[in-house]
Length: 252
Image (cartoon, rainbow, N blue to C red; front, side):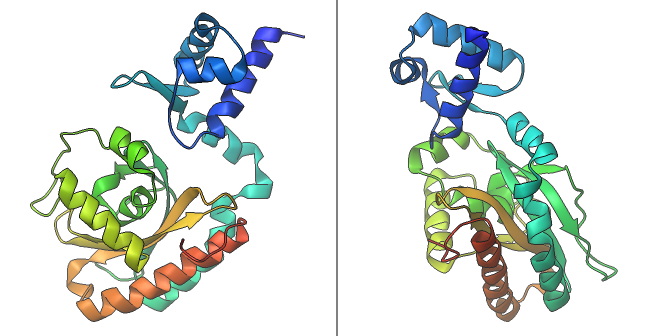
């Protein structure tokens, strides 16, 4: 048996079960390995794209590459397949485009999308990315992260893409608190001028956020009354998907 390979797999599993990025010292202690051994393993995993290093505090966490592999072989846990019926229902109820996103550091990756049938709609593509602090699905997921993890992901200074983009840490903290309280996030033209969105996070059996479901479209159609009613619909859809992947579906 290749012991180095086994150590590498054990390290990947440990990082997968960690809620926050980990340092070499704590990893070495938990694995009962020397720090130099762990550092060599991490260097290899970073070079092969399975782990990413945060230079700000020399911590490590898994990259989206592990998730991408899991999507190919994890038919028993296919989030897009599970969420699709609820996305379809949401599209029918609102008439807007519906997205399913996952979080990759400070960006969202669009896993699935149902296009609105309306002539004027938002334009995104499956596999595309967007800054998480600017879009509804991203804000919904960021709001559920532990403060330290959130701080590491949203490294200042943040880029402003429109006049509505929130970049101040205190403003974002207040925004995330409001999102946790009401259960859904709203993007009011923060990524692209005039494009609004509403989204809610999806959680698994451990309470960990695994994605977000949301709608988007021209801001002219997102009036206060619609935002409130559609927000409740989005929360209901996210909670339904959460229950299907083992979560409580309570939006805790």
